[in-house]
Image (tube, rainbow, N blue to C red; front, side):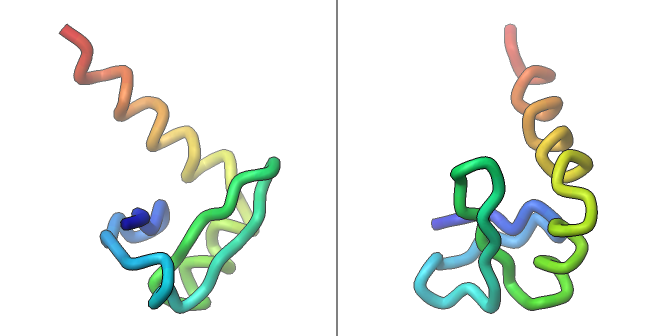
Length: 58
């Protein structure tokens, strides 16, 4: 399973509506609209994920 970083939806990589390559990683999206938003500002969406991961440390 992959997570659409734009809308937060969990999706199957094989059924993803769109995908994007960024810095050697592949990201999957539910639809072209989410891919376009990611391609425009990838760091904005990647930053959300990394910030979220750090908040839950105990």
